[in-house]
Image 1 (cartoon, rainbow, N blue to C red):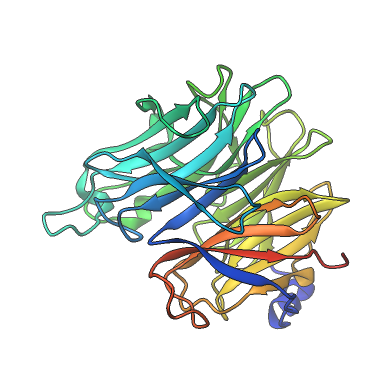
Image 2: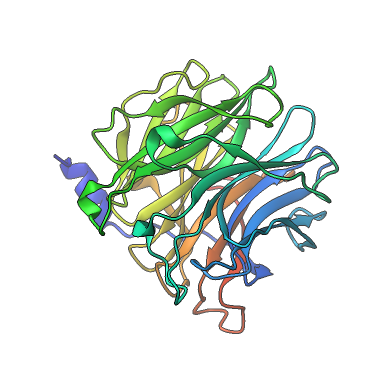
Length: 352
């Protein structure tokens, strides 16, 4: 049962903080951003198609001025099928690692249908030259939980071990949505991101979970912000490098998802898409232990035109301010921008 404080927090409009917004990449979606060893920013994005479409591919864009401008777009992977839903990491060696989900579940008219029984597979590719060229992708076995869809930034531990969130979904047949069982898992690589094996599941399965953001804090604690099938946002933590996780706690109501996590001085910044309306991006500064109060959320941008938006991915800039990329189908305040597009927003953290 929801507490009175939680219900009241939903009813209160969050304050809006000053921010600057600009278009980072036209005709793009689902950004995942990382700071590279050479200081540049890089983001893997979906290109070639809208939210769904067989022409979907994965590209990477770069910025040498802390996100003010983006360019140098390269193709990470483009198969005849729909390549989508990327996760992005930087290995201890400096290699760039991108994992993604591939699906052929489109009918003869090009309409997506997950119940067609066609290929659904998970892959990983690497670049050893800073993202200029990419190796042929290698498969990841996710059969234990139906299929595997990566999400968000990968985590690299001090010893070089890499962790990645992948969610699964056991899909029934004949359109039986009740047969679906979504679950969130952590996969581990001990060879610089070349191969991956399942390490653990987040949660007991009581709540169906999917898109999961991971953060490794300076203390060694891992924090997860997890979207549920009911569109809520939950959190969980691990103190044993992802081997076990606390039972997830509800943080935000339906239509506040999915999330990203960034360590900031004295705490953790959580970013999430606000699909309740007005549509946009919200932030919450929580404790370094991964404790967040939904009542302390603030609005970063709120001019997006529909729920088909969000997926923020952020970094802290050298001056202490924050930068986030997100996607939008369209923007009320910038009607001349491409549909869809990836936008950038910069802002100072509350109290700075």
